[in-house]
Image (cartoon, rainbow, N blue to C red; front, side, top):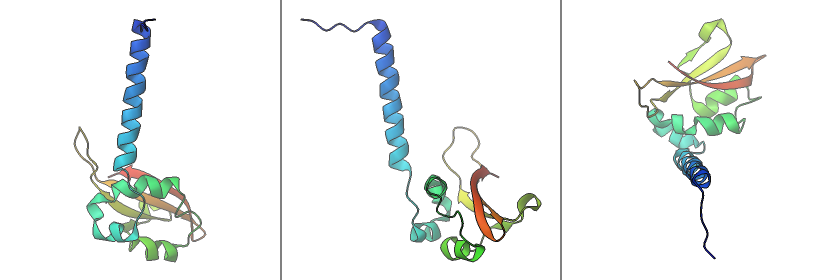
Length: 119
């Protein structure tokens, strides 16, 4: 018995394979947060940003705890809000590379939100 793929099935297979390969590449090049790596390679911090955000690593931590973990911030009170800003380096990009930022928003001295942005 011969197995014949229809054109529709081939297109679906290609999209599925592309999604699988893309997910694998993202997972491979994304790093978990490492305090030593954070301090040693400031230009590569963007690789750890997703882990910091997704794991809620900083949520409910005090400003002092955040400084102990990440070091002194690059900037504070961005847009007049109570926050810390850390430079993450320049992630690879097809357009003009921009410096990525990690913004930690505080309320009552505790982190309530962590956002990745660009400068």
